[in-house]
View 1 (tube, rainbow, N blue to C red):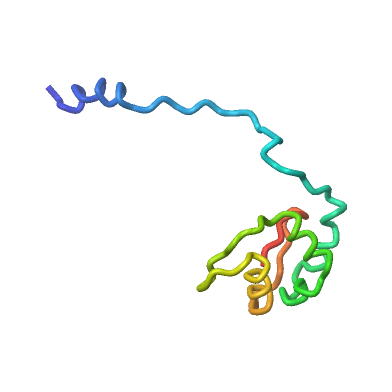
View 2 (view 1 turned 135 degrees about the vertical axis):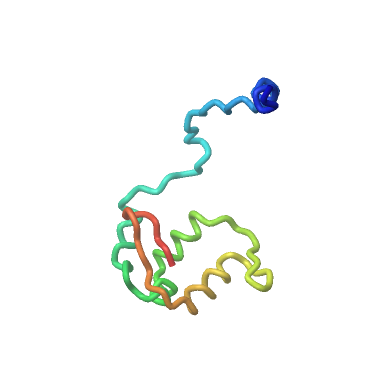
Length: 104
């Protein structure tokens, strides 16, 4: 008799049950941003990242959505300082996807 056939019931008995799908809980997000608040980002699509560094609206948006914490980029620094360092040295143009995902 084939040993694989004998092991099949054991494997099926030990196989974990699928995790049931959960409904989306909007309470997970503090506040979603309306598209009107993010419309100004379209002007930066294809621009140099350094231009974002001087935009007050961008700074306010980042302050609203990023946590206040430390980031490790070779050394520990606040997230705002790490972002400034990235914006100053990035060479790839900024890309905006779906009107709301800004990639630097």
